[in-house]
Image (tube, rainbow, N blue to C red):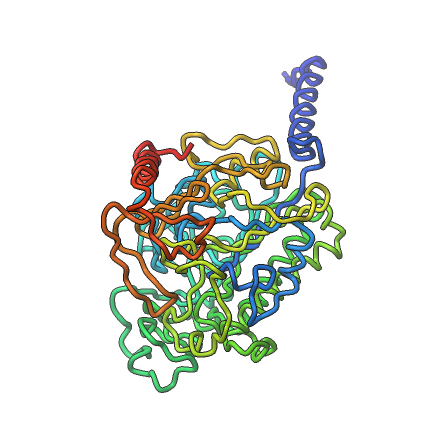
Length: 519
């Protein structure tokens, strides 16, 4: 006997269709309107590497001009008190993407090139929040947050995961760590780009591969000599940190890196133009090794470091031009900042000190990369959104750790209170509607500092002075106190004159550290 399928209830079909329509409508509404009732913007986060407060001309640079960065400043908000959360790259990037200060979690210091992923797959992140709001998300450029599930055991010749795609990014085109660390290859989604099966990659951070050149044994052949460290594997004529063998067809060429990353970023924008998107564009410039493309060499009198700043500015200009060409500029929120303050000699003899001239990489501020002083974490911070933000200058305190809560609030997605304890919603300040941002800034560089209004407290311990080579400063009890309003360069310690202020700020810093939240 032939059985006929039971007819589907017309009421059941109708209900299913209605539910699907409601879900689609809800998602569409979420992605289409912000908390202000305006159309949801695209987000482009341009994240420079080691770009100091004074390294771009809109913040007072004298040895280099940056017309494209200056355009952002002229058409948007320039923050005078914009901060990354740490004076080194890995912890700043971790805090920015997770909304949690890196000092709360062990293993978030500057990572080796074979480190495991330090952001747990499944936890809420800035890109995963925006995914919930209907955004297509991508990271292009420097990663340096680890790949794989355990250190040193990742097979670079197979599927590389977990990584960016497992913590909220739909697309990724990255370098695993930094330009001065192996492996010196690009990773697109889960695979090394251009890898030939017959020439597998081997990576070792403990011992060299027999017969392979090193920066010590082959120093006289290097196209860029090293000053300290950076003398292990030789890739593209430059000594690196760590040892690597194989993967010849996949190796990057340093001079082409800015072009490669920018091309991928532009392609993502082009492919995503018809729906809301979030692009995290993390440039390698101006991190060492500084090997700008020949068309930028000699553009400044500061040598490779100055020319790398010009190259960084070019990258910014290409992004802005693409947005203009696609008529996306009006409703795209562009944020430009840096992962930490500046450094001069960071391991290579590129004459960054010798050719500095009158240029002040940290502007009026003391210290730079690796330092607890203002130059370590007060960085360029520009925001442009023509449809919503009026051009101007803001003195509001604002931190990159606030991106998850703030951008989430803009598209009506709440951050995860348990995993994002330090991210505050400073949307009114970000949009220029309020002169007040957060009421404090935590600065991290091994130890901790706290800024509250005009006051800056630096806790006891050790920190670096200068911009490389460094001096080590030992800070004794009870710590240092500076009045940034009258002394932005942190030259006069007022701790003995204001003991109660020192005591209060030290107690607040201890409370932030101990209670697991910065509210």
